[in-house]
Length: 321
Ligand SMILES: Cc1ncc(COP(=O)(O)O)c(C=O)c1O
Image (cartoon, rainbow, N blue to C red; front, side, top):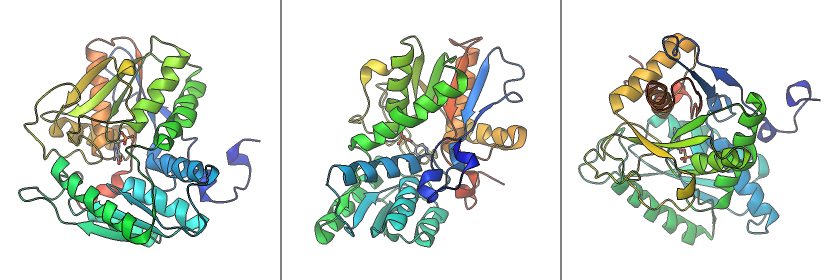
């Protein structure tokens, strides 16, 4: 029996197994296909539900998380929402530490799901809606303080293998099953790099010639070796100008693509209007990058992207006018 044909024990079991949709209208005039994995349909409306579940269940299995122990994580909102869902169902108090630069809907959603939300002021010169590497450093310091104070378990998404494993064991293999393995390339906007690393590992294991591209904000493409001229880009959820991402495996990176704020916005809007897919800035960035690949080195190929989170999370921004 497939999952949709039976009653699930909790919303945790509703995480993952998302649909994969061909963006036929957006690619009408192009040679090749873009397939979009609809991760915004997860219970917390983002792909980060997957890592929340994996990190908590790995820690339970390894005895690193005790019953009723507090869980803490720094989040741009999506991992926190996933952790709020998983921790709420399993009975762990959860504290989300988030920059004030992220959109307000995110904090409200985490609170609604039972999380305690600690908001951290942005660094001097940072703009609302634009979370920089400096902003993230402040959030990290506060997260460490709360962990020590509460003797909490840190669901460290930048370091814990659960982030990689969620995508290596599930997202990647789901895509391979849905396509019969017939994909040529994958590109993904990187925050922690967990999605990229996990999917790329699964794809390369299946077929070494599937090309995997890292997507970064124009003007903050540090992984590609660029200098940071635009630390306050608008693509929330990644592009933090961090050169050290422990989960990334350099041998799985075939190339880098840069996407400007304007192109990310334009493609998020086109996705909504032409394909009925309501994603956020980073989903727009992923599709913009895939279209660039179809116009360039991947003509005639099939490229997979993730729709990272829901457009509902950006109603307070000018993404939707
Ligand atoms: C909206 C959004 N897009 C993209 C990403 C990047 O995903 P990853 O951390 O797997 O690289 C995140 C991560 O939090 C996110 O919230």
